[in-house]
Image (cartoon, rainbow, N blue to C red; front, side, top):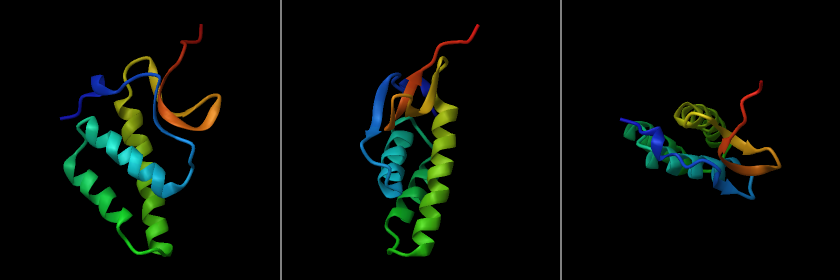
Length: 100
């Protein structure tokens, strides 16, 4: 069972890279830390071990999309998961202000 209360608002998950494999690894670690489904974690990690090539890149791209969605679903109330507004290579759970 997942516990989005473990997600830490306004703290970086990964910074300074936009390499797909780096993002997948960091997002997978965060997803696991938050209690994500072990079979998903195992699948994401297995794709990181694939040999370099087009199929690896395709799998990692799909994993990145899936992890982004999974982490967004785990974002605590009042936060969203994604790149920081001021730094596109700083990913985490960021507090947002409600629009009036």
